[in-house]
Image 1 (cartoon, rainbow, N blue to C red):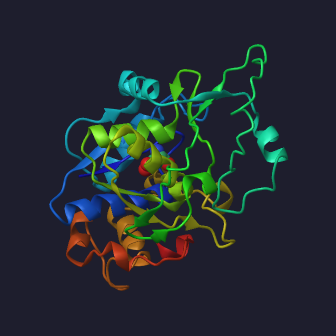
Image 2: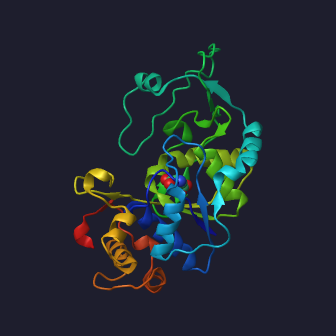
Image 3: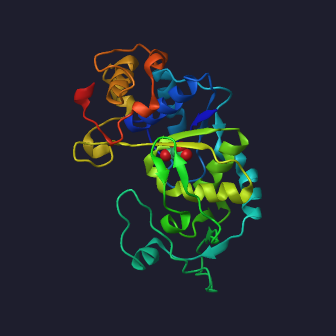
Length: 296
Ligand code: GLU
């Protein structure tokens, strides 16, 4: 069983669509099920109405899913119950504090927490909500074999250090999405490789909670001609913009499937299902996909 897990932080764009196509095709190719989960835990970047627009764009492209649309926010009691089972300590460091303690992370990496608050009893700064971090133990590891990206050789301690599992009483993404996947029986997680550096942390949580680790497939993201992650500066790649310009869904699916080597370079498809006969996730180029609208 697989899943699509959009965050309602903005409109659906080509980068998400390529990853969702991979997740959907990978499951449908083996007759598997696909869930749709909106990752709508409170977040400052969430835009009102974004979830309805996301679903509308996904349906327009021809995605389907099994069962009702799931909402992460409906699962808060389960997240909080798991949080209570995990050791955690309060951390009052700001991002600037953590940055000041080390050199900037390399692209594709996350800021490693050096453990500053672990052994100090700092009085809480007035009015601030603590971040709760999991104290890593030497037995925690989190390394894994990514089904697409290959063996991952760095441990959670090397990548994230003691990582945040909640802010105030709001569970963090790493914990919430792990629990939601495990409780709904998701076995295969296909997602963008921007999340690769926190996957060892997620594996540590799975191990600590006695939950199965899913098989992970981390795919490279779409980038602009300048090599940076596809964003507004590269033009409007929102599905809504292509719809408004009169482009057909089949046109977008064909362009992304060709660029991903899931169909022959001169093949065209009318729907997602038409990609299935030649689909091979492992044929996807390993390098980030450089996008320009000339591909359309
Ligand atoms: N909600 C995340 C996002 O939209 C994806 C998380 C995941 O696939 O695990 O980036």
